[in-house]
Image (cartoon, rainbow, N blue to C red; front, top):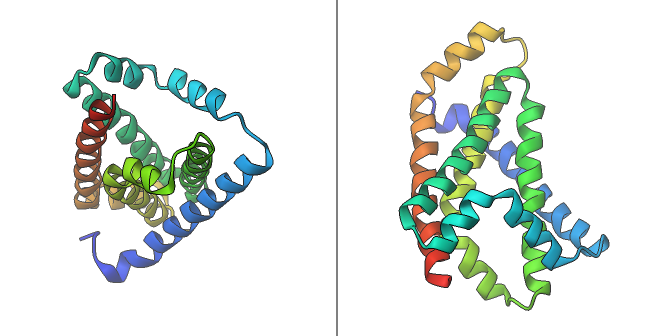
Amino acid sequence: MFLTKSNFFKELKISFQVFGVGVVLGIILASVAKMNAQEFFRNLLEANQDIFQAAQTGNYFELTFSIFKQNLTTAFIIVALGVLHRYLSLAIIFFNGILLGIVILLASELGLSVPKILQMLLPHGVFEIPALLLAGALAIKLSHPGRGFSDRFKTLLKSTSALLVIALLLIIAALIESYSIITLR
């Protein structure tokens, strides 16, 4: 029911635009703030200890599960906040865009070429980013003005196909990202 072009395209477009603006702003912020790339990535690793530890051990299934769990948690928070208000969900989409923009710029400052950065991000990103944008679109759909909390919750329950697509995309992304991390170790 939920995944039809007529009732979904506008929300997906908004989610994509917010993410895109975030990416551009992240690139600008990273260049203006003169961020230290090595310190940024060290902090990113510290914030994601379970993923880092699984990558160090080379345990593919543990790494896949850790990545999937983190991304599913993010998607869940995006959707859950949509029950409260769309701007909360869009803020998370925006922040993820900023984070990606910072990663892209700082990776290039560490000497990685654009093709290498794309090689590292695109294989899993083509699944992960749409999943998060889909979660954002669902959040926007849930938070339409004039809808009460019970109506929003009913819409969420009717949106199981969207939730399943989000989970499937995140599983595929985690499998690809884990493989990439382990083979690049």
